[in-house]
Length: 75
Image 1 (tube, rainbow, N blue to C red):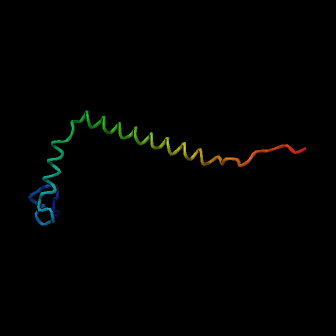
Image 2 (image 1 turned 180 degrees about the vertical axis):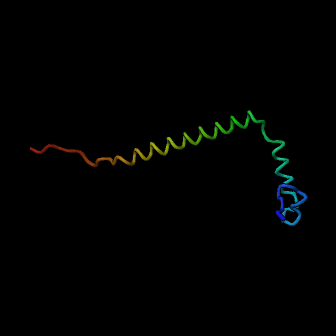
Image 3 (image 1 turned 90 degrees about the horizontal axis):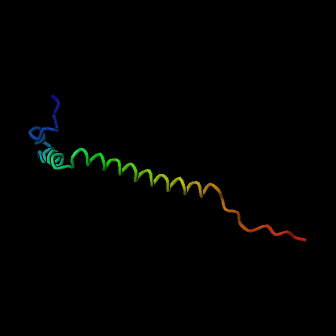
C-alpha cells in the first residue's frame, strides 16, 4: 500500500504529525493571486538576467589582461 503524504490523515506517522501538509495547503490558499505570481516570476527572471550581465561583463574584463607599463622609444 502506498502512503499518500499529501493527505494529512495519512501523515500521522511522520515527525510533523500531519501539520506539514496542512501548513502547505494553508500557504497555498493565502498565496498571491495568479496574476501577481506571474509578475513575481518575471521579476525573478529579470533579476537573474541582470546578475548574468554583471558576470559576463566581469568575465570579459578578466579575459583581456591589462598591459603593464608603456613603450618608450629609445634613441
